[in-house]
Image 1: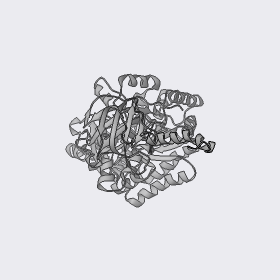
Image 2: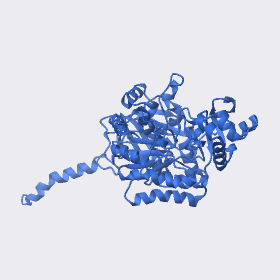
Image 3: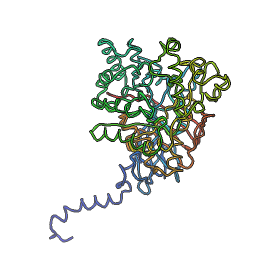
Image 4: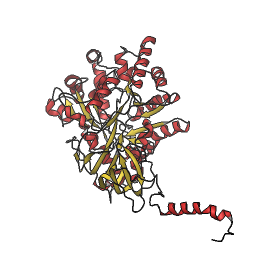
Length: 531
């Protein structure tokens, strides 16, 4: 270089050399996220899969690197990178998605009779990595000490992650309000304090079971007072007061008054004996109108046309567990007429399939019509005189597939199983596999990315989860690897506890929890809110 060269040329040499080094460095450029660290070994490397991130965006090819329980890197590693990992999963030709979040379930912990329930195998086998419990107004195990209960479950190491809500029915019972319509001022304050205690223990909100005792006797003023305790950071979820088609709209609007003070979510949205796509759109319009007013309003549903609950769902509002014997005597004909009319509306006695019946256990798997014929009595008399107010549980074939499919496709409706490890409804063992099979593979109602969002990113947002439900760096590594065409729900109404198949890997908190349909170990944890 000439000694007469301008000084700025000499000054530019260090910058030039830095630029050359940057261009030569194989880890300097990364399109999707930060550069993977090659000096530290990863625990798990998911390689070459098609990533569906949970946001509804178009899938893309990429790798995921996991350390401990966290996604450290997501995307395409630079060429010739020397990544090290303790375990490598080849995900070529497979979809890689967030673990599914079951937004509505029922789990009360393992019992001495059923200690294996803690494995939550029915959920894990259908791709669920997180369940939401404390639903339909019942705190888990009916406890008023959620902190102690959750600590116990944490020690027992559940098979999937779980979080809970506080149950309205539970706090009504624990504070002595019971079946009375209106709590006293002091009782309402006690209910609010018990709710605060549950929220402080990590609950995510309040659930109502307005079709069940004792919540069915409560009114909006009570709900609003409690919903104010939850506030906008949390949410309230509700089994509506009545799901019959002719009372569904009024029940929805009644509950949605709580949007004044909190976020509102309708559990297992359905129309009993409603029919058709148009009716489905009318139901969804109620939710859409509430959202237009600036409120956060959501719902969930399951992909089955039969519901399941106790037999007392068939009794009128003026009958309860305390007065049923008296009503059988003083208003017998009125009671029989009511039940006969209601069951007929609900597709008749052949549409009620027993899953539990105390007095006639040999009729599990048979219908109310079968039992009535066997006893040679009208079905309404069998319910009142033989089964009783709380003597059975059943599956009820009362929904229309066209209507329910419209609801399930809505972008603001999540999917929930309404299931438990002990449930005798196929939804508890098949919901998420059936959702993928029916809506994505067979009917093409939804793209895979749309469907995955409805069972990952959407419920995560509804619940307020901060680091789960998406495939994203620094998020917890709850991940599925599978081919959608292989997802199979095997549970049926007559054989309801058959595990789903087709999920190659279920990764839970960074560990392989299920491989090729076989559970490896329990890696779940208790997730707590900070309301």
